[in-house]
Length: 166
Figure 1 (cartoon, rainbow, N blue to C red):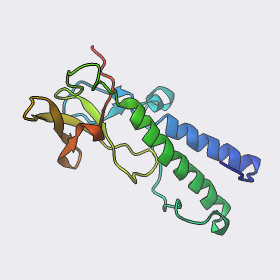
Figure 2 (cartoon, rainbow, N blue to C red):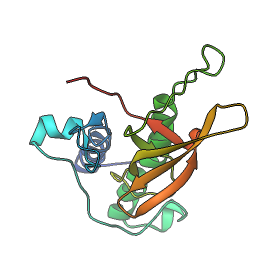
Figure 3 (cartoon, one colour):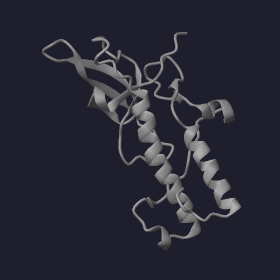
Figure 4 (tube, rainbow, N blue to C red):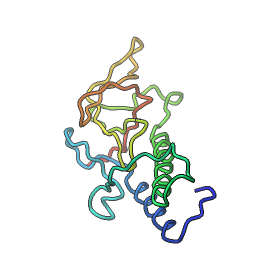
């Protein structure tokens, strides 16, 4: 938050919004149904459903001294989301390149797709429907079924969620 001069209420609001961001992160698939793209989140344990937020204008590129108090708090939330979501997705990616040649992704795995400029509490999710091996028989690209259709992404843009064996 840098050198922000916040009132108690503004600080409390900011911390509660940060708590919601942390509790919106996808942990694992909610069901084993390949058609279900809903992840289990910490929010499910807290309120019984995923956390959501209203769409708000992007304030990341605005000068802080030109914003109202509400807009400044929203800017802090958006800045935290941008930084934390990228760092969390990087933590999800297990680097097995030098330890093993085994594919990190399997068919029907629920994955988080790295996407820039997503609003807070929004995660782009999909299921692996096809792997594309290269000439060396190692898969580095996959087709992912999302709510908007099937997209093709490199493994570097995909983060598999923890699989729970039931």
